[in-house]
Length: 231
Image (cartoon, rainbow, N blue to C red):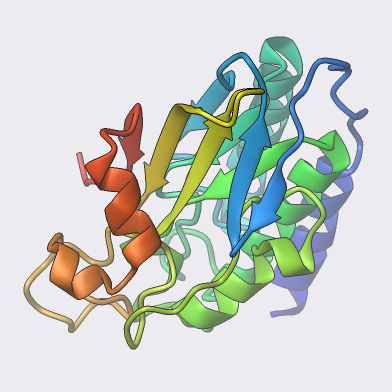
């Protein structure tokens, strides 16, 4: 545990070693009923990052540091309005990394995005909290939410016992017409058995989402629906 704490501190130091992204044209959202709403006559430039697999353990220090640096370099080069982390950000497994603490990864990701001063949207899946991790979906969701950060566009909105990940991001033009819509979904565990996950089985049915805002957004034919599926 002591070595993993030291590892996390080292990775946090790496995450805070970068300069803020220089993008004077970056769009800034407002929050309406928990959803990020942009006002602009152009669409968002979105950078999607997936399968990052940061473990934040002593056994994966080298790989984790390389991943953090690559993420920062990519975002700095592309200068997006919004970064979407679309699954498998976390890969905590004691046999692989030497730690069960999935909040280490959440802390590192939050610190990196806030250091880069870039707006970002997390998606959640089975790897964020499973049988091997110390913290459940609720704890991770709250830590990565807009309430706990400056640049996350995610607001915790609990729909079912373990569902925290359905939300939307929209862009309205100066005439208040919708020109871009992104719907972000929590894919849960996507398996029938709950033995290896603290997330719920994926239920892609509007009656189970229990979220009218997301349902209405889907009816408007969004430009993209973002969720994680295993490869």
